[in-house]
Structure formats: structure tokens, C-alpha cells
Image (cartoon, rainbow, N blue to C red; front, side):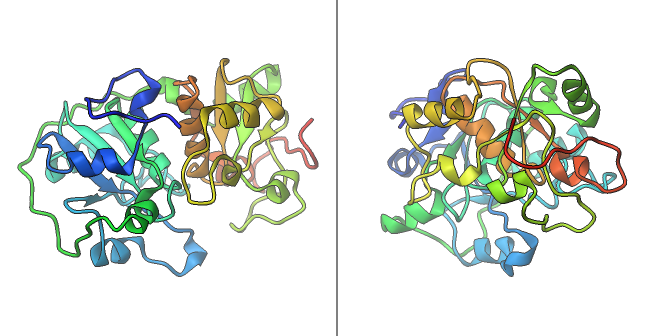
Amino acid sequence: MPQVSKEDFVPGSAKNWIVETDWLADHLDAPDLIVFDGSWHLPNSGRDAKAEYLAEHIPGALFFDIDDLVDEKSPLPHMLPPTPKFASRMKKMGVGDGMRIVIYDTYGLFSAARVWWTFRAMGHQDVAVLNGGLKKWKAEGRPLEDMAPVPRTARHFTPLLNNSLVRDLDDIKGYVAKGGTQIVDARPKARFEGTESEPRPGLRAGHIPGSKNVPSSTILNADGTLKSKAELEKIFRDVGIDPQQPVVTTCGSGVTASMLSLALSVIGQDNAAVYDGAWAEWGQETLDTPVETGPAK
């Protein structure tokens, strides 16, 4: 498992994408470190991520609301926000250029990856995910708090959209038409193959033609931590994905796709792009986008 030692993150290295709980515990008081609770739950889960954050969180952690920091003009769920909106929110929270960022969630490793990808897409590279998240932190008996964090002084945040990490509908249409581009889908097998209906209404069943399937659950250990580099490499290669070549990830709405992008980055593919619209866009009954069913071809 890639770990970060008690040294600064190393931008551009797989070491800086994942940090362990002992590292975070040792660095919680660092003045240049920002911790985010990036928890998010499926709409039908009956859970309220913000309320859970207020009830207990890692000391000093801020809350990153995936459903609020979005492109409000898009009808699709939690699409990447415009850069000015993102920069404004970060400034108000006291998150600025040059700061180190660590993100966690309540499951172990789920929505934190989406927040990690969002920061990277906004040009911030010094960002990592807490391996095992709040689940592991609590299991180890580490401190929690239920009070609002002390307000931070506003800081300047310079957003620079990293287009290499983002794909849109036209991009995917082009890939499907030409072939040759690696696309990997993080949805469960039944949804990928079209034997199970999509949870969102108005969507067809199936997958993007030519895409492969790596269900997001398969890249995690039982405790919510990321599997080893060797295991991840094998998982992708076994379905026909070469991690050393360009890859585009997708899923239902862009959350678990980010988990695959994180896993690919850990094994060396730092530019694994996310199709932000994902199946919530491609699978719409009103679109003429091609759809395949059954196992990946």
C-alpha cells in the first residue's frame, strides 16, 4: 500500500494521493494542512452527510458539500462547478494556494475520491485521500469533535481548470465512433450489463460501447482501504485495461468513477480522466447515444 512518510507531499508522485491515519494524526496541527470531510450518500440512503459531519468529525475538518459545489446551470447531478464559484468558496473557507489538503469520508473511501478529483481538476495537486477514512480513524480510537471548526482567514485560491482530467459528452461520442480509447465503468456488474435497472429515472440500461467494467467495490479491502498496488494493477489488466495507457473512467454520476481514477493514479496513471456527465447523461432515454448490454466485449 503506498504510504506517505512524515515528510511533505511530493507533487507528481503516487505517494501524495493516499495518506494513512497515523500520518494525518501526526500532522493535524500543521498550519498549512486543510482536512475536508467529503462524505456524500446516495439520495435513497436516508442519510444526511452534513448532519453526520456536525455530529462528529476529525478535529478541525471542514465540510465539502458535493451537492452544493456544483454547476448550477447543469441538470445533471453534482457536475464540476465553474472555476470562479469554486475559488470563491475555497477563499471563504480559508483554503488557499500552497496548502496541503487531505480528504476523507465516512465509508472509508468513496466520495472522498470525487473531492480529490475535483481539486485536481481545479489545478490543485497537493491533495490526498485518507486511506480508510473516518471508519478507520474511529476504529483506531482517534479523536473526534462535534463543534464547528474555528473560522479561517480568507485566502487566495487560484483555479486553473485541468482539462486533461475532464471529459464531456462530445468527447465520449468521439471515442466511441473512432474506437481505441480505454473507458472503464465503475458501476456494479448488473447495472453495467443492463440486467438491473438504473436507480435514476429516465435512464436506459447498459453501458457505453467498448467500455470495460471494474465495479468500484472491487478495488477496496473489507475495511474500506484501497487494495495494494499489485492487486489494483491486476484488477485493471484482467478486464483488458492497460493502466500505463490513457484511461477515461465513468459510472452513474461521476462519484465512483473518481475512485477508479484515484486507483489508477496510485499505480502510475496520473491523468485518468473522469467523464463527468457519466451514465446520468449518456444513458438518458431522450439521447441517441449508443448503448450496449451484456458483458464487456
